[in-house]
Image (cartoon, rainbow, N blue to C red; front, side):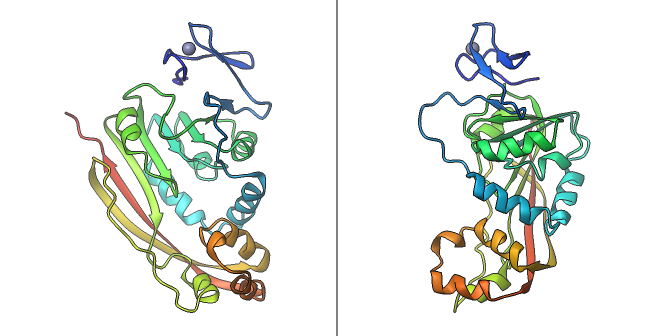
Length: 257
Ligand SMILES: [Zn+2]
């Protein structure tokens, strides 16, 4: 295990139900198996239990399975893999690497993740302050989470790769057609990662979403916060909907200096 103490930066060792550094800072493992390395007293803004439930329900329908398969394929051959903003571990659990770390701020999400996947070190920590030493990871992954550029550059080994997934222009377009009078395509911009782009691909698949999954999918989108009750009602009238899932997968390489 490569995790470091968030207080002093020394390596942590797992002893029974705790992670301890040489300066005797202690951190507890939860019953479900994740580790809490958050030291700030500030209220944490992670996804709550209802959101985690909605997302698990939707993801378990398999609608995004093709994305999961593709990024697992792209990450193949890595020894140490870090998933930044791993949520309930839907993608993390699919990566085939001997040493995996998943970071998120949501206790509810990591509880779910740790229960279902014993092969990953799930850790509560900010992706903008990763409890990892420099140059330890072969691959970093960020799937629908903010880009933590400086931390990714710090923890990747020279020559290591970063896989970044963002929504494509037409992602969930049919749902927006139901919700809005004038639906717009997602804006796509080239992110500045400070690394060399070595591959970029757009993948898409249509899926049929039943009413229950449709509500769950809506809840996990940013539209859930900015859609009126009247507009939402139109979505509730749909028994099912054929929807496009479209993703852009960027693969970057950290150059050797
Ligand atoms: Zn310490």
